[in-house]
Image 1 (cartoon, rainbow, N blue to C red):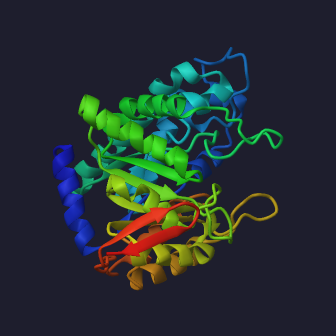
Image 2: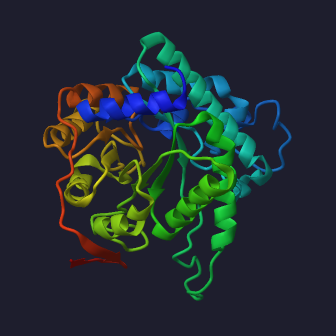
Length: 353
């Protein structure tokens, strides 16, 4: 497959015929490596002044072969799209490890490793293999104060977050087919990321289709910043995303009603990648590949989705089972809706024409 435009055209054709498969959790696979502090540091950061164990994105620099092997495993399991290991590759998130100045390099290398793996799989199979540049929410929020006694306080402002997102996206751009703004718990953070991507398109000609994935944080059916799934969609639909959906926080059983809600109102592709169930008392995930696939296979047969994958706790075995369960199922096709004005605060508002 030669060139990004040809790859995207091929994927769009495939998406009209079947459900696309996204990969599974990068963090789960990294945890299975059982790396200690020295394993994270490598030779380059042997003398770094703070602990960096748990900074999964730094492995793009210190253990690139391991990161690339994870991408390979997911592609071999049936993934059409791989997410880069860049969930926290912003200057804001990397500041926790005093690595904010390294954020562009971490993002660039994460995207390059995923691209290399995808290209190798394309050459081997002849099928398009895409890379989605993962843009996480950072560890800051613009909508909620972290200080209970000062509701107006924010740790970052709009412009700081926009600059950080733009820096990350610019660093990944040469190697990715999509930008995936994911695990959106605060819609305002997501709108900043969207603004950064729109500005890069206008100012620097960096134009990649945008995928969006929100997070319903519990059975209240709302994001952490308080929006329902429908209100979230109304808040971000202006960017005309290539796909929109939900990931993380909930397992498939708990997430299904909110995916069904989006499938009734969204006019683009529906993306879903739930956790492998809910975490147990040890914070681990017990849902087997067959159990996860049984849920997602039903979603597929019900015509709810266009793209399926896995989030926390999922493995290549989960993705293989999901791909098998979704095989032959029809992709979601949006129903025509009456023209209306759609507004959103915490709740959606619709005014028919």
